[in-house]
Each structure stands twice: as structure tokens, then as C-alpha cells.
Picture 1 (cartoon, helix red, strand yellow):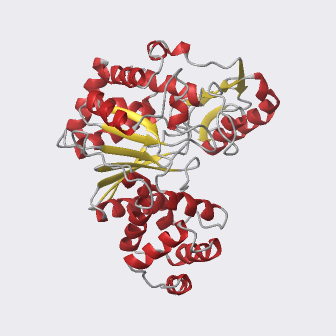
Picture 2 (picture 1 turned 90 degrees about the horizontal axis):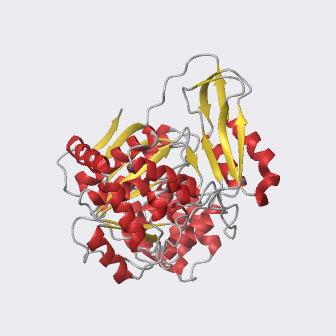
Picture 3 (picture 1 turned 120 degrees about the horizontal axis):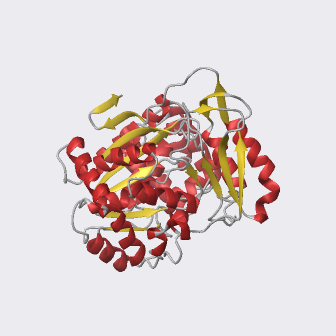
Length: 443
């Protein structure tokens, strides 16, 4: 078997066999196949696509290229949730405790962020003392005892995907649906979940900007999960504006705590309830979404979900006083208001520009080696549909003195992100579609 023959085969639109895909992934991982040949193959996939079976085979070969976590010692159906990312997306910090309180174990491995703000792991590290590094035995024991643990990803999980992703990033092949879908799902499958709920974002702050592309990606991932024996569904949710009002690590922890108290933004609460409802159904704790939602609302109202977050923070060495009093979380020294220069209604918010503004203030990483300022970020005061008067505050920037030289640029990006019109604007839907193995249901 030769790589050049497989490149030609895919270039000509033919399907590769399970063995041929395995040959490519193993050869590339071990250095037997050079970058230039794998780049040619990735470009052939970009133009010719892959069948559902090919994509599933690619996923499994990448998943098995490194550590595969066996969660069988954890009691119950383990349901994972994955978001394709967005601005202000702190859903894991709400959903994990909420679902665990309802009796579905959450054994979650999350990553760090590169870009707008930190990933879930960075956000949790805004809690003083919180450790994202647990030994496997401790990880399993914690989930069995309290139903919840969120840790950093294993250093040797899906090394083939890491290597291939790095290559795609510099060869203009990132936007291939089969390659995106297999990248995401290889990590989920290697992490050992029995069932997977995918939150696929769509809009200006998402990787997929259009609804049709988001549905195509979601369908590809659901097909992979189904092919490899994992119960998988996907929700398409809005990212044409940030989720909630806070963008930044400690700021998002504070907003997640407020949501678990029943005092958070309604858009964040609603998206979390929708995703968590599907997790309960897949976990066998509810017959349908309506029954699941009733259980979850009771867990919020009773304070059990918030208590579960405190239990996880305590178990992982964090300061639970910061959960009881979010005012103890890291705070920035400077708070600068960005004010409206036009009267009307908020028609649009370019979520990606808001995310870039947060990064400029120190809330995210520009490079792999950047150090995040956990207190930095911004708080929105206006969302789509809200009326605005001249001089009203659109957002508040949170920053510390080392980032003061970026204040003008960040303020300008926030102003430019807001579109204001004279006409009244309807509220945007939060969820556009549900993708299951049976098909696509648009709302």
C-alpha cells in the first residue's frame, strides 16, 4: 500500500477502505508519511468529501491513535456534551452540575481556549485553588461519589488528530466537514462517553456562519456517533450574538453561578435546559424532553444543582467561598463603559468582534504561549432587540493596567460590533434545529 495511490484514489472521488484510512493515519502519526503527502490527501478530501462510513473509520482510527478512556467503572450511562464553541459559552459550568444533580454522571474532559476567551478549563481555574489535573482513579472515584468531574484532556489523547489538525490549519483545509466532524468526534469517543449531545453553534460568532452549513456539520457528527455505536444527537443553537451577558473567564463563572441560582440570563438558562434535557433522555432518566425539563427545573429551584457545583469545586481543591459569594472571584482594576452614539434598537451584534475585544483585554490567547488574565473581559448591557438611547452603555470593559494600551482598539471593536437601526427588531430564536439519527427537525 502506498500513500500516493490513496491520494490519487481520493482525488478521483473514490471511497477509501477501512484499512487504507488506517494506513494513512498510522503512517502519518508515526512519521512514515510526510506532511506534504498528508496535505495532498487532506486537500483531496476537501474537494471530494468522504462518505459516512469513511468519516466514521477516520474518526475511530484517530481516536485509537492514543489513550482511549474506559469509563465502565463509573456507574450509569455517561453522557458527554460538546459545544463547537462561541462567545460567552459557559454552558458546561451550568449543565454539568445540573445534569449530575438529576442523576446522570458527567465525566468530562475539556480543553483550553485559543482565541476569544479561555476554554472551560481556563474558566474553572478562575476559582482559587481549583485543580483540573486528576489521576484516572481519582477522576473515576469522584464521578461515582458526586456524579461530576471536569478535568483537562489527557496529553496523549488523539495524537493523530492533533497532528492532522495542525497540518490542516496551515494548508487551508480546516473547513472540510468530514475533517471537522471526525476531529471533534474522535476526541469524544476517546473520552469514553456512552452518549453524546452536541451543541453546534451557528452565526457570526460561530465556526459555521450559516444554518445550512451548521446542519451539515451536525448531521456528519451524528452519523459518526451512530456508525460507531454511540447514541448521539445535535442541537443547532444561535451564536449571532454572545450567549448571556458576560465574556471572560471569572466573569463567566460568576454568570454561571447566577444561572444555577435561578438568577442568570434567560438565554443562557434556556439553552442549558434544552441541552441538559437531551442529556437526561439519553441517560435514561426521563422518557422525553418535557419530563426531563421538569426534573431539571426542580433541581435549579431547590438549589441542588448549585450545591453539586460546590461539591465538585471542593473535591478538586477549589475555594467554595467563591461559589457562595461570587464577589470573591478575580476582579479587574479598571472598568470602562462603551456608550451608544446612535438612538434606536440593537439589530445585530457581531459576536466574533466582541470576542476579539475580550481577547485584546487579556481574556483570551493570541498565541499558544499567551497568559490569560482571568479577571479580564466585558459585560454586555444591550442585546439584540433592546432599545438604545444616545449615551446609554452598550458594554463595560474589564481590564487590568498591563492591557491599558489596547483599550482604544477594544472599545472601537465593541462599537463596531453593534448594529443599531430605527426599526423595532424581533428577538432571535435560541435554537434552530435538532438533528437525530432519524433526521433533521427545524424549529
